[in-house]
Length: 204
Image (cartoon, rainbow, N blue to C red; front, side):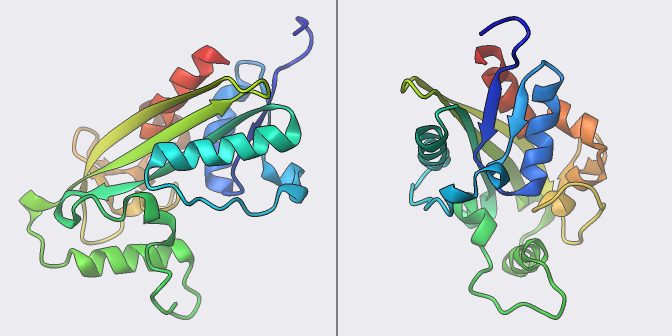
């Protein structure tokens, strides 16, 4: 790679929230970042793995094969102790079996189901964690997978307007805030995804 040519990396996601969180730290280091919206021909990638690591590799391999570029994929979710680490790899589609309320987003429906399932869990049993597994795959087949975690406590009522997914109901005791109450820069610095991304960035 020449000095004046940025490394181009494809983020294997169409989730706008993930694209923002992953792209910002990479672009600061001169990496040109594009998402799957730039490659509509790829279509939906079936995530049929049983672990975060497997799903991240499935997505990254598929995108690297089509684009011929370095691909970075993140598979992440929330593990709740009281639910035997559910929703886990099914976090994004956890409440797909629930009917939506008028005007309700998918994220809001997931939160509604999770709070219903944990309504009887006492405060001391509401431990949870965000997990992010990130895979980087090069067109020549070289791969790496890293994992980052972020411990918290499940609230009974959402708080905060930043972030996405389960951010409004994961309270971080050491900061006195939910993930959705952190500003984006602070969240990127301390989050599960931020931890994984720093390890990936060293390789890129």
